[in-house]
Image 1: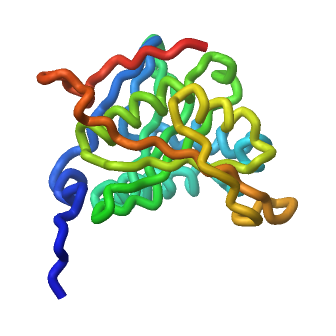
Image 2 (image 1 turned 180 degrees about the horizontal axis):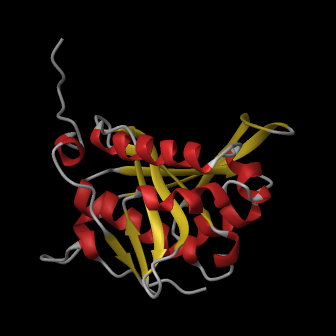
Length: 211
């Protein structure tokens, strides 16, 4: 049965191309994960806050290394896209942003993120989310991005507000956490490709964000 519309996002953008390096204001760099980041990933998932909202922990650096291999393979299979957020002054990992639940046919995906404990309070996540969103809309060609979080996760709600993800409603009892099912807030942002000046490159864009 033939489709009457073309895929919004071409799979070749992932399967036939290297994952891009993106820049954000304030000396942040979004880059592909590498094996040498495994210790940072292991340390991040020991944090109680990350465990609480992401419902995951790494048992060893070896397991963290396997995750990185899976994240990089997910790009090549065009099913998810994961970036390490690094500080350009010293190269240290300060966070993570990703696109999950990617639907290339419909041009939709969900944004996910965390910040290392030592990097919190510096607007690392909002700046990284803005850079990722710009790339997803103006380079990759996604039409709609969603952002969901537990109604109890107030920092994530502030990230959504700062980055222009409008609140659309509550998904009742849809997120399973360690203490049971949580209601989840749904935020979303729609592409406005027409507002971008000709010649602007969002794959290397510096995004303006304030604390």
